[in-house]
Amino acid sequence: MAEPSHAAVIETRGLSKRYRGGQLAVDGLDLAVPRGSVFGFLGPNGSGKTTTIRMLLGLIDATEGEARLLGEPMPSAARRVLPRVGALIEGPALYGFLSGRANLHRFDAADPTADPRTRRTRVEDALERVGLSAAAGKKAKAYSLGMKQRLGIAAALLKPRELLVLDEPTNGLDPQGMREIRSLVRALAQEGTTVFLSSHLLDEIEQVCTHTAVMNRGRLVTQGTVAEMSAGVRGRLTVTTPDGAEAARVLKEHGVGDLTVTGDEVTGELPPPEAARGPESPDAAGEPDLAGLNAALVRSGVRVRGFGVTRASLEDVFVTLTGEGFDVAG
Ligand SMILES: Nc1ncnc2c1ncn2[C@@H]1O[C@H](COP(=O)(O)OP(=O)(O)O)[C@@H](O)[C@H]1O
Ligand SMILES: [Mg+2]
Image 1: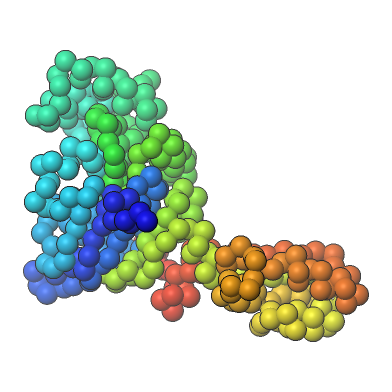
Image 2: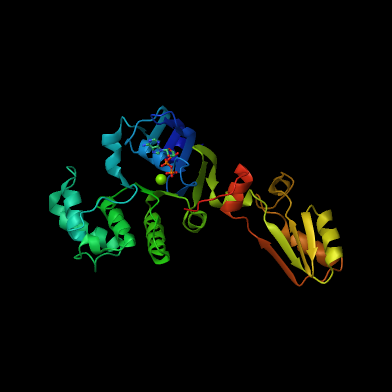
């Protein structure tokens, strides 16, 4: 059996950070980021994401606990490990008076492990990867925020990386800028780079990530695949029918709860996925038997004109698990 830790590119155990002044910003974090995943580190502002990333990269010391990066202990293995990890934390440090291309040259020249003979090619390749070739000669101060972020990612891509760590890469971007970063992340993942990105935006994580860990007030709320997570929260079923009362009776019989009949619409909460996950059930894990429900309605003479399920969102997951709203305004 495969040892799970070998597949993890980031692994923490009991990782905690108490800042001077006594505040516990990260509290006993156990994180496992599988190789090859696009891992969304999700949480409201102030939930400890940046603090965790800073500890992972050895930029600040943990108060307690352990962190391993690419299987090696941090921060002691930093010199060995960090060259294989690209990172963009809270916006890139750019020289506004230099062009995007010149910024990358300068950044690469500051890296003692980078080969100056291949610099020109690597810079052009990185610009191409992030879609900045055409704008490479412009001064960085003339770049949009999205272009600046992409230049920061280009800087992280000047060398081949096994892992890319991006702290809120779409923060402050307009929808177009966000789309650009998302498609870049997808492309990098397809090339085999594991991407660990933090965000306070639920739909962003749902759109781009395979896995997620959810933070709240310094603590891990849950982690797993995005699909598992939304399957872990019940979706709502909506049946459109002129036979509302009869439909509600049949659905109740089949474990659908919280039923309401409004006009020709019957809505209810699907049965908990555990019910469908039992050993005697051949259904896919976590999937309620929708075909069976539909068939039962029809068998009872209910005229089904519409039958649909609203999938649970990560927001539903967060609210269900924390009992709090995911309020990220401001
Ligand atoms: N350098 C610091 N000194 C003291 N407290 C800090 C420092 N940096 C962050 N914090 C606090 O730690 C908590 C977590 O912050 P942070 O890791 O930045 O969260 P996030 O990145 O999820 O928004 C917040 O309450 C924040 O105010
Ligand atoms: Mg942050």
